[in-house]
Length: 432
Image (cartoon, rainbow, N blue to C red; front, side):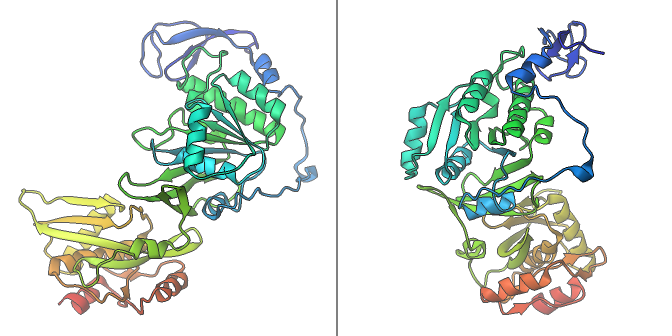
């Protein structure tokens, strides 16, 4: 059994551990990245205040402590969390640079009592400038600018804040581990100690994380397993819309989204997303169709746009924004085979207006109708709402929460729905 003070060698690139030094890390293939350090696990646990012995308990005799979620009074944020912040939870918030992560957590902190904001990226003066620019006025936020993990945990022990914000986890550094801030070793171990401290002291810790070019949180994949909630703030660079999405939530559903609009005063809640996504819609234009989609418990309407044009290349292009490209290829094949539309020599482009991404199959019919309308150069009734899943035989399948979609469509003045058994019938009805 490995002793608590045993010397081990850790790869500073990938975090792999070895009992002996070697020139090359077998896990990541990098040379001369193994650093020696003593495995002082018991000392680390004491530093984090985790030296209490564990006990075996019968599950039937475990009593659940009654707790009340902390309401941030930002409805879209609370919706994604499942009704508010759970005391003692660890929340990871990721997103592209400049998307609004720090702005969002500062607005959340402004709504709460006694928040400790730990910044490893900005000075207190820079945070105060952003605070004033957003027009926030809370006097219950304390700022601590530090990157050393031991100092952060010590100040947290002293202040005992109900909520601590770490901006960002990639800047935090622990001298117990031989690597630079932001490395896989540092991100993993610092997150683990903060998570253990949060559970021991019933303090909610919000970690802000950078994302990689693939869109996932930078650092080891185990980082997402350590935390209770993983949130992503998404949005297009040239759109003001921002979508807060839960990729993991131990205290609620992961299919809820929060919709915000970026303004000079920060992120504002969008309480009527259907109106937002349709406010600049042009009517009687070929290739545009309105569909009703479901995200979590809410239904809202979005516009699907399609454009077809004769290709000048030997192989036609297929491009999609906000829609799965593989699904688009499938729908084009169905239109060719089941609706007799010759799209083999047509470039096809699809756009979901507003920067939103839709993954549910209920939008299949709207995409197919938009492609057919653009190809035939005919507009459909502007009061028509279209939703349904398409099968390979061209049949239109029912979708979940149909009544919710119909209610939302009628609320915004869409008086008719596309009704047919197959996509071929709809194409003949509206475009022939």
